[in-house]
Image (cartoon, rainbow, N blue to C red):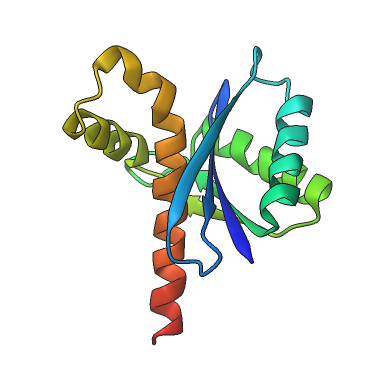
Length: 144
């Protein structure tokens, strides 16, 4: 079993996949689209990755505001969640993604990746943070 983590943005979706033991998250790609509401190809690519990696569950970032309120992006993410569940038949869990992009940017800065090259990696790394947070949570819940 593997779990897929997704960072859903206005024009990209960062994708991460867990290892088979559900211990670590690895970023695998960024799916890009030309327009925000053109999701058919995005969903088709996610379905291909689900089959390739034998994914049984999806974790989707929930972009809450820093003051814990829900904004427009949350509504769009919830709509995307519904689409994913209908198309894939898999359960989709929402996971708080606050500060994942900030953390991803910090990691790239520390790794010496130049600012102009960070944008091409940030969504994939943010998806890793979303998925890793969920994996760690699951592990902690099992150990209680």
